[in-house]
Image (cartoon, rainbow, N blue to C red; front, side, top):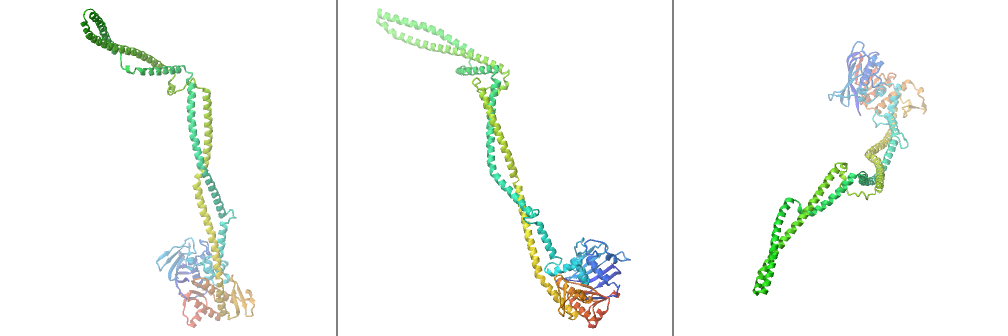
Length: 617
């Protein structure tokens, strides 16, 4: 157990004291002084160093005690004390004007960081006790005047000995039950547990709906694409059909265009005819003049040859006649004459072919020139027509549309039918797109909803863990308190042993219940009411209870007693002093008295203690 005792007080300026140093022993310290000698001032200084003068409050408040000990002739108001806690010397300094303090571990040479906003912190740090417990059980002996809060805390300490002293089981259980109630249950619809679970259910429902929608999404998207493709085809068909109808309306009634169309067809026919005269391309009149000259020269030669040809036949006739009439040898001349005739025929035949070819080519050329002139005439007409009101129809000139055979009413009906299909398709697409936008909005929120689901699941899991932890904590605290109920038996045993010594076995038994209320049984086996007992006995009773409580509930913390045995007779005083001496082996005792009985008894017994006389300080 932690042991704390006071080694030295350094009073800079406090009450009637200036620059006073008081050293204590770790065992029994007897401080003697007459009334008004300053005993209560030193006790108050110890309390002030540890807790300030704000009656346990954490902030500075007006305090009559603070004003009572404020020096009259000094501007300084403060001091320090050295405590030993588990073999470490710890110095606490305090300025009583503003309540500020400093805690320093002298053994380690380092400051201990305190909570400046909590003026009680030095006492809490060193002793582990709050102000009410210190005042009621450490530095004020009259148990009957103990604060109700201090009594409640000591009862809880005894029923929960394994729990930290500043921890209150009943308040802890109350806090935990309140926290569990704040977390709520499935039926507490306004509390976090039910609200979180309800929202999580709603989120899961939304995710289920999204999964159903996602299953239809791709099919709807595919249909949308098909409708868009169909719309594209319909719009293309519509444009083609509209162009045809507009073409008919804008062009069919145009005489210029009809002429243009007629002359264009005539031009196409001429171009086809000209394909027969490809061999004449590039020829001109000079070529045919030269060719005619050659032909005429050949024709003259042909006439001469013809004369010679007929002359040969005449000669042949003469030879035959002479052969018959004159001499048969004239028939020999027939052979050369036949040769001349044959040769002349061949030449005449070749000249005749050349002449025929020339005349034929000449006739074709003449026809070719006529066609060319006709083509030039048509092209001139087309140029003139094209310069008029046909410019905006240039892209349609090559369209193969038979305007005369076109049924415009049927074409317009078909155009309107296509338009209706387009509008129907657009309505379907718009409806599908609106539906898909809604679906996409739901799907786009899926990640956020999943994140929210994870958050809610984590929160719900955390709430469940908290509730389980709270239930476990409550059960554990109750179990520990139940296990430690036996500590009251130990206290009752110690109190009975001490009271028997102090009262000289006047009573059969003394039992304190769980509320620390005494039940006293006389030797005649009657239970006595408290008002039947003397004040002296009650002081003895509570003296024994306090010592027992300190041994059982607290660490080995010093005790400050101020004339606590003043009502005892000499025999009871001797027994109490001996009991305190035994206690001082583990716990420092600082005993203030204005009587000499204690010092006389200790001297007569030869017992050495730390004795301080207020007159000599």
